[in-house]
Length: 203
Image (cartoon, rainbow, N blue to C red; front, side):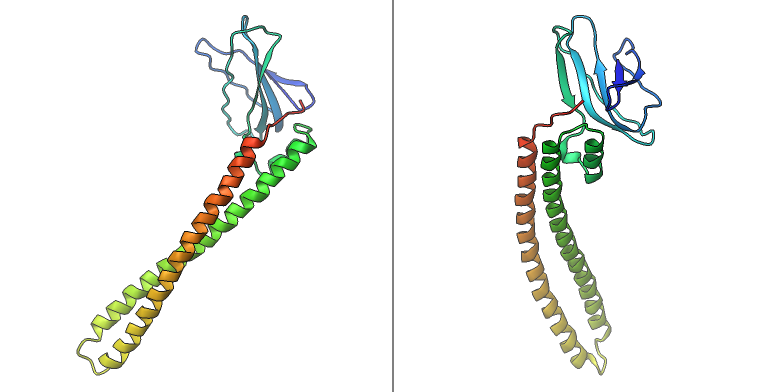
């Protein structure tokens, strides 16, 4: 088994043990390619492995019966897990071509749409939680006023506040339902874009 950098230079080699387990130590940072080969099997290649800061990574190399002159290509980094920094690194190291980079960036832009919708939903959820807490406080205040000279005036005020809050909660609930529909639709676009993307590596 061997690992190569974006320029095709072999940076590490090892052999799997009797259980098929293997380990590479001290890999350089960057986008790497791993190849596994065995007699009577096709070469298994895993492209787009991103090594950074000595982080522990796990990738399976699945060997298939066949001629060693044939290579089974697998891409390690799925577009759904891609970040803009990873895409830029891939382009700099020529691990993907410009067309694939453009496609990945369109996916990232659509993922940003999903994230923005998630943030809007979370903001409304937080507002609802605050309203629930405030309602609990108002109800406790109303209980504490029982029998006091201020009871009638303040109870009317608190009751109006509770009614206003219920109206707001109803509106927030409808808004969250609509946002969730938009999230589902936007995520569906992301999933479709990923399915349509064939990642061709340049190594």
